[in-house]
Length: 238
Image (cartoon, rainbow, N blue to C red; front, top):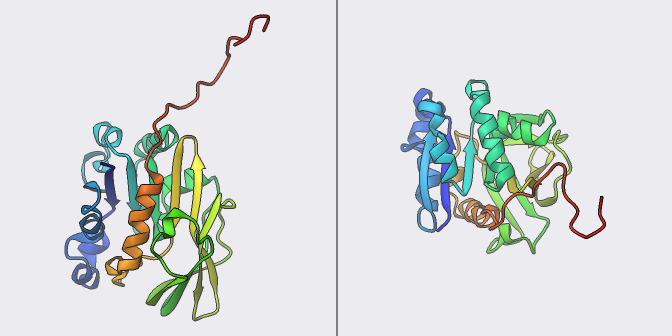
């Protein structure tokens, strides 16, 4: 069974009663609850020792789901480096919503990952632009969210390996809202929706996309290539 760790900084839930009412078990608890039907799931949060991402936890994680917003700067560089190495070794990474500005996502992308945003109860329509992709298995032509935070282009990310969703908002903006990448042996999926004051992670279609992404991002059964000086495979090689 795929082993999933759901990481959340867990700060909005402590500060904002609106968020606490929507997610009484925390955003991490809500995500873990719908994933546990299909996967072996644990949670980790910012204020735990090593942010809950000890060597033991990371080594026993096949896919890491990441949600952060208020406290990106409080994530230690040492933990970020360990997560990066696990991704390069094959661990899957799913970055949600405001995790676009997390240290780990910016490190793996190599860009600012900045964007336009607005909190104004915009309707979001996430259009499926790669209907054969396994991440959209069971999803129709689009997902519609009646109230969400707007993210708009330009989104300063590298061109995705695969673009799965493009969002449209009632303010007229569009956004690349479902993007896949490969880094080393690892697969990464960025998925836009999930502002903390809206019940987005209770939406069954959003849940389906995240569960599909976990299956897609699980590691393949192979070791990383060996790099550096190499002996010839054939006789006569120098």
